[in-house]
Image (cartoon, rainbow, N blue to C red; front, top):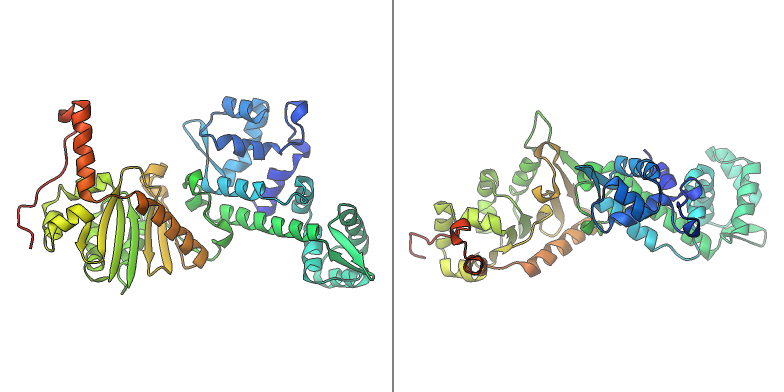
Length: 401
């Protein structure tokens, strides 16, 4: 599926009318399907009801969305993904002068895409357009005349001193289409990664994802993603920020030098990882090497190095190197199987900035170990079932040095 085909299926309302006459033309059916899934996972009968279409239409509507990774099916229910959410955001921000019908026609017509791109570069007389079209394999004279007439009627093209140029509405149409196409292209090309990300990560700038690298686990190389994170630790760093929901011996070993020698280190784990740490006397000894009380109270295992913890699930494993390079992969909470796991590596400033913002959001909710243990103890006292919820902490056997 091409980005243009995806946009055409999303926006072309000619064959996607609402089942209720009063709502016809409000939004294309597949847009309504995505909007319905913003409320949570839905099976086909519920999806049809909320989208105001028949079940048969719902089946047909959701198929290309699943193919493009805008939704994901699990246990006979469909869930909105990161890329589906991003498409909806861009759709909701369309300029009032840009109609869905004009975008759909643009998606269907490579010739119209060519014409808007050329007129967006500079104003041109019709004869110049015809000549350029001939040289570039573009539309014929008749097609150019027909398209310009339609675009003038719709207010997207003006004529001034014999030359044709895009109006402000035409510029908005061109910009909106290019943004939607770039998002669609990112969703399709990188869907092995983004289809596993939940809708709440819909702010991921898919239009900036181009030139990012994908790292896939395969049957022959089932640890490619893990190895990407391990190899990232083998460089000299000034700053490291990370998030994780698992503990791995390979990662422990790889990142030990980072924790010891990198000037600025902050890592956010889930509470479950904290309990795993404290079941391992080697980690307790390591934390006690500087000041165990500082680690418990502030998460500090040395100056400018902190381990903090969040109670909720983390959607991404994240490693940010010197605020200029990022590696990220879906966490188990997304439902991804290890065999299907794919990491994304990027140095694009927009992607890195997004990753930093996501990290900071979780950092605001993170707590030091002592707080986690206190909350765990309080929950045991409250439910009166301490024998079913053991406190998985440990006291170091060696004195803090």
